[in-house]
Amino acid sequence: MVEHPDEPYPAGTGGGPVAPTRPGPAPARPIWETDRRVAAARAAWRAASAATADPRWARPGSAAAEGAEQGFAYWPDGWPPDAVALEAPAVDGWAPEPRRRARGALPAVLAAAGAVLTMIASMLAWATVRAFGMVEFSVSGMDPTQHGRLTFGLGIVVGIAALGLAARPHGHPARLLAGVTGVAGFAIALVALVDIGYLRGGGLFAGSGIEATTTIAPGLWLVLGGGLLALAAALFARPGSQPVGQAGQFVGPAGGQPWPAVAPDGWAAPGMAAVADGPPDGPTRQTGHAGTGTADPRPGDADAGLMGS
Image (cartoon, rainbow, N blue to C red; front, side):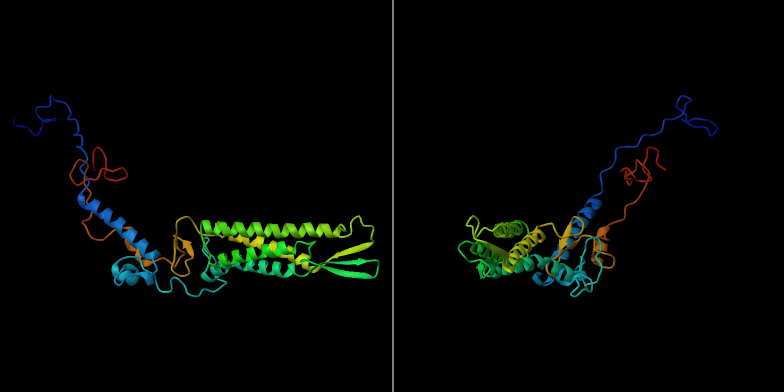
């Protein structure tokens, strides 16, 4: 049928407007795009593995050993830092390496100090007694009427726990050592407080009718101080008590200390920038009108729609 140019509607349509053609079903995603996403995910996984691996354990030719030459993430110059000034500021919970090392050793130092102080003070004089105005004698912690042997044994327990804390354990061992240190420290402090109250109340000659005065000697106060130091060590040794960065952290090879997944400005690994957009190879996605073989009808595309552009 021949159409005339002056006819308002195409011939054979009954003189009415033509309904717009509905777009066909969305075409399947090109295979090259799927491969590109898989390659990008694989590159990101390898980059994260290279960033968290110890280069000393890497095989020759691996990403951790050769860094950017393999196309994955690598440590930039000066990272991780071998020596950071103590006055360097913390960024989003990230603390410089020396400060983290000192903070990690604090529980072991406190526990060791509390153990040594408790064991030495348990053998010192705990009280001085004056009777009849002219008789004076000292009461040692190791006397049968005192609890010096008990506090000495608890001090040994705290010392053993301090050796375990010096290894900086994590997880269940850290909780176990913190619990042992805390219980032993609490018991030491409790025994010291009970003996202080007993001696101040005239327990040695209570009900005997003998006029005597009892003075607490420094040894018993030192035992109390050793128990408090052990309690402080247990509080610092609890997992999660030290401030850290945001969730999702990597463990670095320098001392095994954690730092945030997002490093501070100027500390990011340049190799990760190439992973964000996927591998550079592969054709570029072409845009087109909806209903064609090159269109991507996913929501959010500027050129996707019923009518196209």
